[in-house]
Every structure is written in structure tokens, then in C-alpha cells.
Length: 157
Image 1 (tube, rainbow, N blue to C red):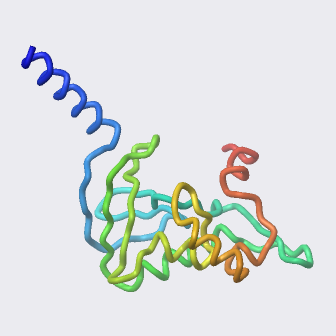
Image 2 (cartoon, rainbow, N blue to C red):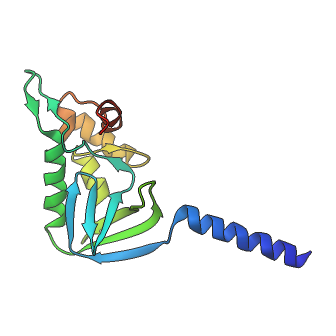
Image 3 (spheres, rainbow, N blue to C red):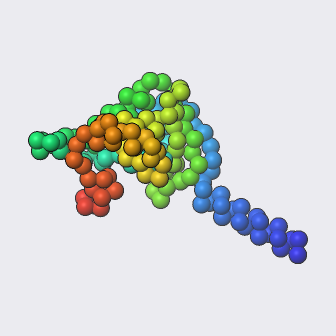
């Protein structure tokens, strides 16, 4: 009976490890791929808890003029990453095999900052930061925009 319980615990642990991915930390120089993903130490990481406009995604201002909001989001991430070494905590892996990361540059929480400054929407986290950005009309909240998830569905590759 005890061996059966130990066997079940081992199987449950293996399944949990597979579903969550390896918990680990990376520290190094990072480069922005787009507004919510980066490359660090040869790995592509997706910032967890947020969703940024896609690179080709455009927003429009009150006068109907289009703005490259996807490129603006990437520039915002680039600026944060350019400050120095980045520390990313990776706890899960997304469906594309990328590590889902919560990253910091010094004392700055990169994920929270992107949402708070309006360069990404909350996606499973950072709801209060999104509310701050929306209330202040920062970043994409100064424009009319389609949520990135909706935009991707309508513009499938």
C-alpha cells in the first residue's frame, strides 16, 4: 500500500513538473523581440501576465490617424532592457515552448511597468497596473485599439 502511494506521488510530481516547466532564474543582457517577448542567453522568453500589441498592429487617435502601437510597445521594452542586466524568473512554459517569465531590471519590475505605462494589457495579472494606465490615458489607452488577442485572431498568419 505504501509503495502504491509513493508511486502515485512520484507520478503526480512528474506530471506537475511537466505542466509547470522548470522553475529557474536567468540573469543577463536581454533584447526585445516585440512588446512582450525577449531573447536572453539564447532563449526566447514571453513576459507573463501581460499581452502587448503585435508588431504590425496599429491603433488610431481621436482624429483617426494610425499609430504603430505594436512598434511603440517594443521600443518601450527595449528601453527597459537597455538599462543593464535583467533577471528573469521562469516558472512555466507556454504552448510554443517559450519560458513564461517575470523579469526585473534592477528594482524595476519590467512586466508591471509595461502594463502601468500602457504598453501592454493585463493578461492574467497586473489588473491594478492596467487600471492606472487606463485612468491616466497612458500608452495604448490614449488611442482606440483592438485587444492584442482579438487582433491576432483577425490577422492570422
